[in-house]
Image (tube, rainbow, N blue to C red; front, side, top):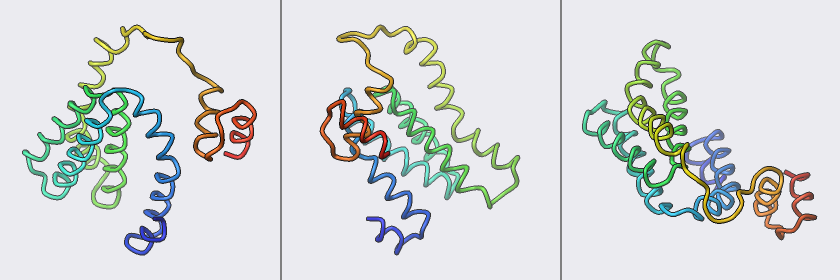
Length: 168
């Protein structure tokens, strides 16, 4: 995959392709354990197509579709905020050579303010008050160790977690 991306788009894109491929299993594993994953994927693709179209043509319809897909994606699963941040960082990278800093900032605010305001208000009025149901929340080193061992294809045991964390 990296070689194909390098041939078609260049070295930076090949590196990104390799990084995404290497980290796709843990991301898929953790995101798929919650409901709404398929909707997140569909809405991420919809938002991406609308976002690219808006960057190319500055159309209002594509901007409204981007906003709608971003908000619906966030409602489908809170991890969609990762996609929203990626779009904002992608726009910063896309426009870094095209215009002055104030114009880039204005463009960034125009495109991402509505979804980010929705994300912030949804967090303040809904997400922060959620109660964790089911089992005890896990976090910290066991989760990092598990992610590292799964990333390297190792068994999920404490010894392999330590080895995987040392390698990664």
